[in-house]
Amino acid sequence: MVKFDLHPQNPNKRDVKTIVDILKDGGIGVIPTDSVYALTCLKSNKDGIERIIKITGKAEKKAKLSLLCKDLKEVADHTLPYDNHIFKTMKRYLPGPYTFILNANSSVTKFFKNNKKEIGIRIPDNKVVQGILEILDEPLISTSLNLEDSDFDFLTGIEGIEAMYKGTVDFVVDSGPLELGETTILDCTSGEIILVREGKGVID
Image 1 (cartoon, rainbow, N blue to C red):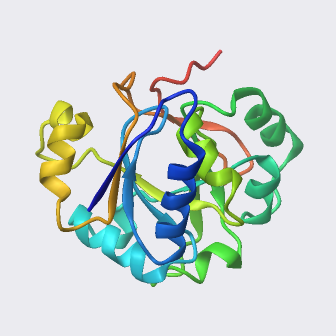
Image 2 (image 1 turned 135 degrees about the horizontal axis):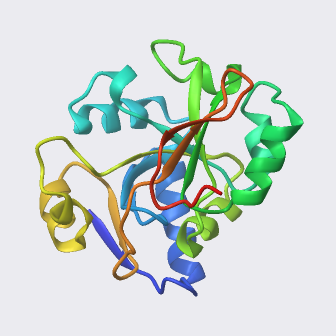
């Protein structure tokens, strides 16, 4: 397992490129976001998705996987069409600590065993994630490190994460302390915007 120490506002571009190379080579890792640390791999990495699901110890349907995108254009490339009021809401809140649940198109569903119909969409307000996505030609799959029956602080502390995932992930990124908190979840699959969970993201 490789550990990368990156500045939260100005991550080293050479290290970011190395992380991208690991991801393109089929690797999985732990990255910071604007909420908590998350397990991640390329969207097209079927084996990586299975590894992540196995690490979570949950069934695929309960693993709460999200798509990390660089911008709204990339979101639209991986979801079914959605109403303009949903687009305006995403444009208003993103990037930020929000998860929008949208109907996925075939470019996403084919990478899941259960032909996943819905997907959580995130555009994190985090320079490390943005730096990684900027030089990729596809989104990342991710799931937060908030395992059931585990200590929340432990799973968001990099030393604890290193110890827990040594031998199971290919890299870990440390960009310093995070302002911890869960994302606000908004379900848009019906055409309406339904608040599922209120987290760090403010809803007005």
